Image (tube, rainbow, N blue to C red):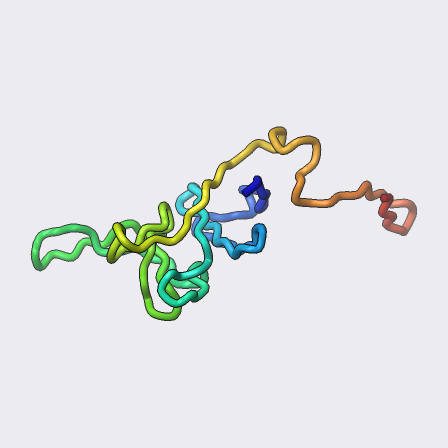
Length: 137
């Protein structure tokens, strides 16, 4: 799998997610408190679009009768049956040793590392001449 530019960081706010098609696979890209993660958009249970599900947190380990909520924004729930997965690594919340969603590496790169032009966007020189906008290609 190659490198695929999803968009610029400024247009991808904290808590945002985008579902993109990369090499024939539907992938969900999430911004969790400024960190970016990518998961396969397919629940391993029955194939639902996992990344369209509710994003929330989960209960944390605590004493009996005590309920501590944490990891807000790091858990995605399958929209069909509610199975929960950790956005940061694809592990199942209920059975992390047996159930997992494929996760992908995400990097933030300076525009200079992408070459002279963003490889994901085709651009043309544009000029305004009098009252007309002219595209040259």
